[in-house]
Image (cartoon, rainbow, N blue to C red):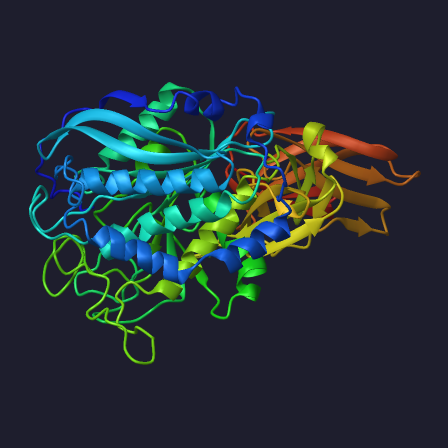
Length: 576
């Protein structure tokens, strides 16, 4: 969708309901899991990984794309009565396919419409389509949400008569969600999964706004929202919105962009949404790529969407949910329908010539089935693992000189297997620089680069599957280690906490014969200028000084133990 181009009259979404009354209790976790337990439970992480890699079908993806192409126009304001054309016909076909998946999995999949009212391109009543696969465990009621929009448009926002095939935008995302619903109903997951297809994205994200509002109104907990929009094309258009495309007709089918919100558009990029994106990238590199003939690269984009544009993940994020968007590296247009670009035009077709040549290989696709399949695998594996993963931890953070001490406690201490992601702040760094693996709930990481801000986060691990990484904790890795001055029998230990804002504890260990009655700590800035002097009395053993930042200092400072005209030993502290 292109913001600023929407001219359709749209009323606020009201009267939001679902057609299957069993859906809401399941999404709230108020149901008996035994009613939805398959005869044979398959939920081993390796079974999910290899099953999704091996069971998804390029032929099915092409078949589905070819089918939805026959509905001629999928504008949100198009025909709802015809059985062969318009938005009503295609949503009934999607609903029917979900019912087929339901029948194939012993009715474990609940199939429903999500109805809402609001004037969009002359139509007042609208329907999202979704399937719900209930989880096996209602202890943790978080739901995992996969989505795409199935509506299309031509150059005119409300042109309900044009041919609008929408193969790249967003037939690709539509068939990805449908194929994953077919495949994943063969498995069992601890958490409930929703496979959702929404309408009215191209007029202002209205189907997603309605769905996210209904979820919020009903206090449904979402662990993650994965939105797929323009996910199968591989050819760059002339007017494509940044960031991404290098130029007209550039080809790329080995990268995919992940857009997500963060608190700042720079390399700090701190937010749960960015953590979800890093989670996806980590699994792609470690588990998925080794199984693919063509490995994929996840590009984490600093912005929440392309320049001047938006997507269906945004209404969910705005309501406090952890939501991200997957989009092809190369996109054929900026949504204006400007020739020669195909997006939002009659030219957004599957391929130039779909007749099968004598060798049986069709090579003229604009939506690449192999690329779409790899993006489907990326979504499916992470969706499955999110649905069996433990909850993310809530660690205690204790800065130490040159690193961090991390303590897992309470319910988090039962896992005894953790992963720690480390990012070092520098221009453009959005990924984990290092991921550590530990088998203890008391973790210390030291020896970090001095004077660089580091971001730490932790994931619990159960049966080889990580939880989402917790919110990041930043610390300035001060590089000066503990110093021992043998001549005077004095040892300066790291101050704690460090960094700090208001107070820190300065610690000196003195030998048995040491007596300093008129010593002081001299605080200096990074230019060596004295900013404060604090009298201290040093006795044998451990000596603690509670330093209060009463002067409102900020930055890097040294603190030096001074006695009888001599600097005895020094340390560094960071004040924010």
